[in-house]
Image (cartoon, rainbow, N blue to C red; front, side):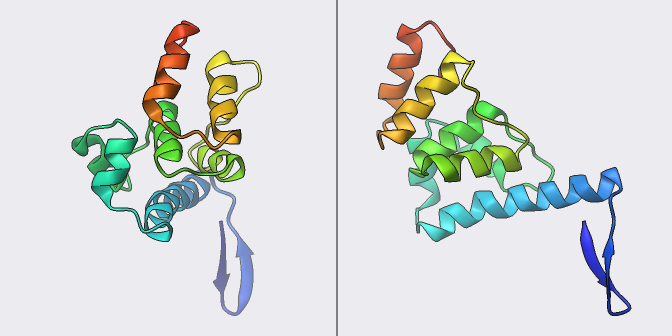
Length: 131
């Protein structure tokens, strides 16, 4: 992390500091996307096909969502591929071109098709985990 101390820019590369910065960034990203696009929470978790309790956990700084949950949120929020990659990265994940699930999800996002049920049907038909 970087902070100001006595008028100077100070780098703090301790593992704990970096982890706290990542966690804070993830928390801000999750809620900022929802606020930025002016979605209602209920619309976001329903479109992501996640329950209200899990969605509530996402607002907790100490909660670290699974890749599946982050992807479901990206689809619910209709994020672009770049926004999806950024949000996944902030949670410590990435889209892989060697994972069939990721390739299928990438296809749907690139083609601006955000119906989670259609995506899950396609994932299921390829015998890969659904969201």
